[in-house]
Every structure is written in structure tokens, then in C-alpha cells.
Figure 1 (cartoon, helix red, strand yellow):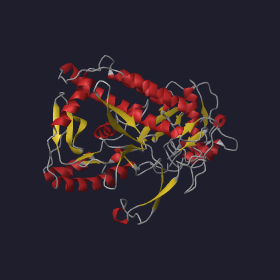
Figure 2: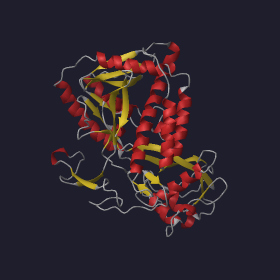
Figure 3: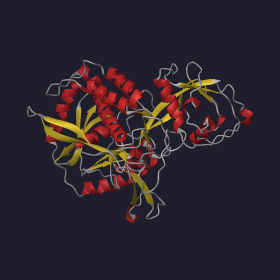
Figure 4: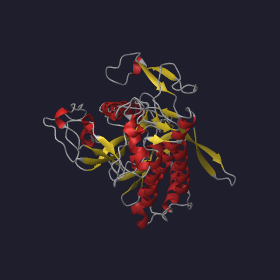
Length: 470
């Protein structure tokens, strides 16, 4: 995708800057005026722009295991939040069940139709032990062939519940997963797998008798609140890709992020260009000074290496945010985040050669901590306003007492007694249909959203404080 963009840009004389890490957006008088970055030598690079389009991915590096590169650290969410944008639906994180040990079978699609056994490190069966009465493991496996990511929309949720309960009880394998046992599978009599990302296999081939699987963080369905052309509430700032919220609600099909990137990328690019033509660039001096103060604080947080902070964050997220959540675990997560965030800092940014090599990693780690707090607070708020026993909202699952899938109905409360969670209907503007072939007036069901933004207040000593509020 990047090569295609570059080939389009070059004939237009567009200058491409690489090996830079953008650390914050520049905002003057509530208008985005550019961005501040660090180059590979630790030098500051200021970009003055009449319009900025952000497309920087998610925050999967918060978790013990992920499908993403090491630089997917929530930078877009954190920068947008600091700039004054609103984040929406951040509690809706998606996870995949990923092979982490052994050779998986080749069946041209999900291997769940083989109806294997799910066992812990001691060989004990774990799936059937977690199922409610009347539900079979075969039904759970069949539902999981409809989608790769974790979702509470169907009975496949019990696969994820079994995995997380086992791992958190200390019965997981060497890679912090559980085992899928194919030793009793008769490959000549299994149902064909539903092909998803690959065509059907010509030959079915079993791999190892037993493989280890674990939850791997994939994508966040939430992000920056935008309207139809990728505009948040800040003039001159546009967001696209996984960084945004809205197209998917609480759940999505695999591959759906392409729409967030390509469709909204095209729409935002066009509108951003028109905005830039009609706007005069303004000075960003005050905004730069504010960011330098933040960098000064970060530059002194090296008494505890950034990789140790991330390691602790991954432990917290793995025990509190992956698929299965509870009020107690989320509260523990917030307490742990508060400990990781407690550090003093100076008042002036200084350029230091030894520091430059790790400063960007410290900035990324700070962004991860910010996003982790937003996600945890949103998940906890979702739990507290749901019925005490349990709640499911597609890619979010809260457990208290014994759990059952909720019955949803248009125009009615998702859960009895929770009037604040009504199913609403939103008519897409016929003049702004953002998907090719979208029919005017098509109805989309939306659920009440939980959003967060920074609010500024003055401390007792006259200092400026920022707090997250719903």
C-alpha cells in the first residue's frame, strides 16, 4: 500500500519523510496546525501544515501477544486525545486464537470443524467443562468457523472463555496458552472447513497431535470519533484507518479495517486538501513549547527501563483485558497503571545522545499507558452500567455471576433494567453514503457509546492538570 502511495505521490512532487517518529499534533486556538516529530538522531522536526491526516494503526503492543509490529503502540489515539479529540468505543478490542506451539493441521480454513479436544497443561478437558447446559462443543466450534476474531455475538464466545479461565488459573502451557488435541480426530469423516482467507485445501493434512494456542491482540474497533469525511472535532485534523471509531460499532468482520483505511482515507484526503487550500497556516510556537515540556518529563523517566514498563503493562493487560473481564480485574488494572505512571520529571527538554536511542520507545510506552487507561476505564464503565451478573457487547465480555448470551431486540433495552443501553437507529445521509452500493436510508443499529476526553483544571499549586472524563 505504501509503495502504491509513493508511486502516486512522486509525479506530483510530494515530499516523503521517512525514519521519523511523530510525537504530537500541534494545536493552536483549537485548530490543528501541524505536527512535531523526532528523527533517528533525536533531533526535533516541526511540520507546519494547514491540514493533517492521521493513519497510524492501533495499540496491540499493550498485550502479551499480538499480530502486529512492535511500533503499533497507540500513538494515534494518545496524540488525538492530547490534541482535544474524543475517543469512542475503546473497550471493544478484538483478539484472535493463534497457534503458538506445534504444527497445525492444513484443512483450507479453520480447523475447528475437526472437533478436537481443548485441554490444559495437565491434559484435562476445558471446553465442555465451561459450557452451559444444552450447548455442545461441536456447536461452539461451528460458530467459530464464521469468524476469526473473538466475538460474543454467538456461542463461540465459550471457546475464548475456556481459554482465558484456564490460563488465568495457572493451567496454561509454556507459551501461556492452552492445547488443541487432534489425536482422536478421524480426518476421513470431518466436515469441510469454511474457507475464509484461503481457498479450500485439495488435501486435508493433520499436523502435530497437539498444538498450543493463545489469544493474540488484533484490532481495536474504537478510536477517534469522526464524521463522514474523517473529521474529528478539531479543524484541520483528520483521522482514518484503525485510529478511528464508527464504521464497525462493537464488532466487525475480518478485513473490515480496509474500509476504514481506504474508504475514509480517500474521503479525508479530498476534504483535507480542500481545507488546506482555503486556510492560511498559523504559527505553532505555543503548541511546540507545551510539547517540549512533555518531552522533558519523559526524558527523565529512565530510572526504570521502558521495556520493563511494557512488560508489566503486558502482564496487567493479559490478566484483565483479554476477552474475559471483570470489575475486580479492571480495578486491579487501573491500580497497576497508576503505579506505572507515577514518576517525577524536570521542566526543560534536553538533547542527550544516550537518551536519544530510547526516547522514542519511552514516548511510545507512555502512549500505551494512556490508551490502556482509556480502554480500562471504558470497559469498567461498561461493566458498572450493565446488569451485575454478566454482559456482552460483541467484542467485549464482562463476567460476574453465571453467564448467558443476552437477547437483543431493536428499540428495546439490551439488558433488562438498563435503560441507558437502548438500541438506536441512525439513517445514513443519502448525500454522504460512504460505501459503494450503500442504499440511501439504509438503517444501522448503534448502541450507546462510552467516550473519553481530556479535561484541564488548575491544581492547588497553580499547575495545569489533565484528567480523563467520560
